[in-house]
Image 1: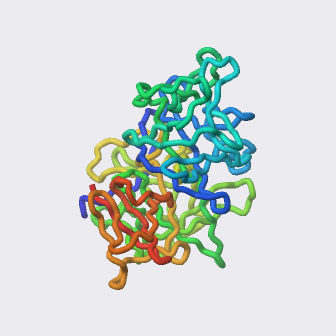
Image 2: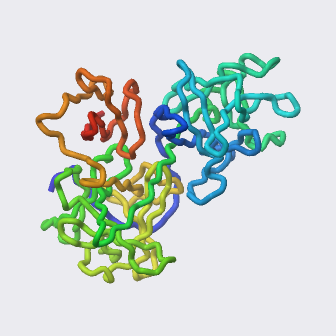
Length: 410
């Protein structure tokens, strides 16, 4: 058995803390007629500021907990689009199409973010490691010319987590580092017999982004029925449709059915030493059904309640691993996080062919020989600038309406 294969297990829910890594990516520039919406999220310290996002309240901007529910009345207050203005940006809020500006607060003691039809300032996004500093190009009249960098306040002095502005000596603190999280609809489409939608279910771990759940029987290890293997767009054993467990409207459980075999990922696991291995069933009523929980950036936790009443999560573990992982409070980018990417007829994803344009990787950047007319997106569908150094992983390059899969290695 290839040592690179990683096996799927379920795991009893225990809690510890994982820290997620965030890749620095500029937001895609867009317009009012074709907008691309983003959360502006702070890295933040553990004093209540972690992961807060720019949120409009009245005409002021605060850091608030991210809203992901599509029906929430507060969602649009947290979404922003970016228009190019020379080398700067204009930043628009979705709730009212007003622009991000900078002004004094009521007591005139700090400068804060606000909304305006015609703000005096534009914005610069300065890369800082895995994040960006957000810099105002103009300060309020009479303001401190050095305090132009967005900063997530704390609750000291009743600032109530307002977005304020500080000098550049704060730039390397977690409260002045921001990144841009796409708000694309990451809901998983349910299949019917008439309209199946096929997915690759891949790990969200950065080092395993191009590895997906594959229906496989390892004869040397009879308890292993599924493995993690490198995605092959022509391999039906890596393609899954998602169907409802029952017809009840309130029942959100689903089943995962393999395209090649019809096997259903079972919720009854097999205990082998410290691990619970997933099996398969051929009957839709032979599984208790799975729940999916979106945890941000297109990543999902996948979990089920087994017959013993214990909730267990799908997890990616090394073949050579001796002890199971702990399920953390933050599971993004870990073995407990999964991506659902449509394949085949649903995305136009194609294997590379002999008549494709010459696409190659140079100095961690994707290049299309002889052309600047192409779009790069990561595996989550988020656009990536051509001039940005890329992290290791899988990228989709659109050239003349065709999509090509390119791997950037470490």
